[in-house]
Length: 76
Image 1 (tube, rainbow, N blue to C red):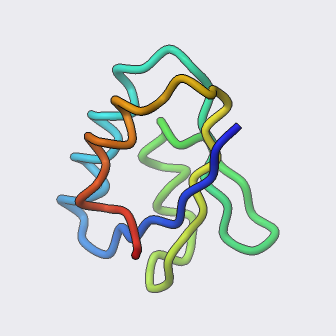
Image 2: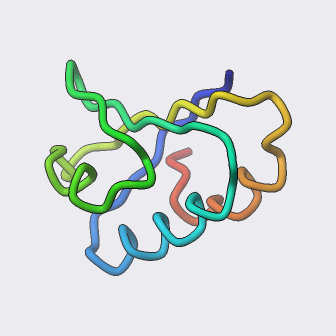
């Protein structure tokens, strides 16, 4: 499992992010505090507080290609 902090502050970013992660077969969750949602769910993502960085948990160790694609959303 790998975890990265991401920021999805714009509606367009949420749509782009979901389009990217939906192409991968492994499970992914987004965590904001105690709330956890499926990273492939647009409605779930909008239920989170997007004004702050959120944690993306990727349940795969072979996700380098995904990490490269979501680089614009990764919080440094």
